[in-house]
Image 1: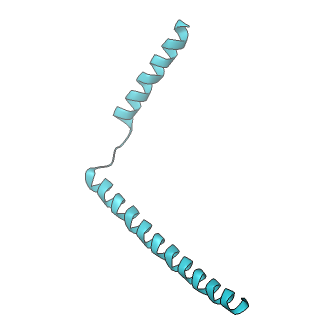
Image 2 (image 1 turned 30 degrees about the vertical axis):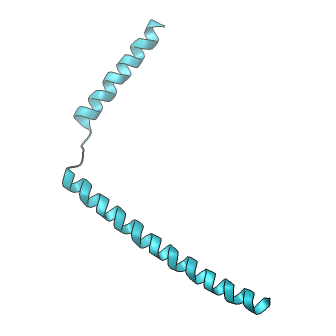
Image 3 (image 1 turned 90 degrees about the vertical axis):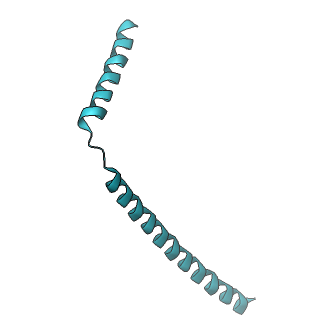
Length: 68
């Protein structure tokens, strides 16, 4: 059981060292610009889906009115 906890401790130390010394974290400016790109793309995609959904709704309402 002691060996199990030693492995967990070693893993935790290695993970910490990797996060602190090896990972390159983005700067605040890079993070902000990436967030703006994601928000813009999400908004554009939402508008495209809204347009497609509205078009299909319009088409289906007209088809149902012709049939019934």
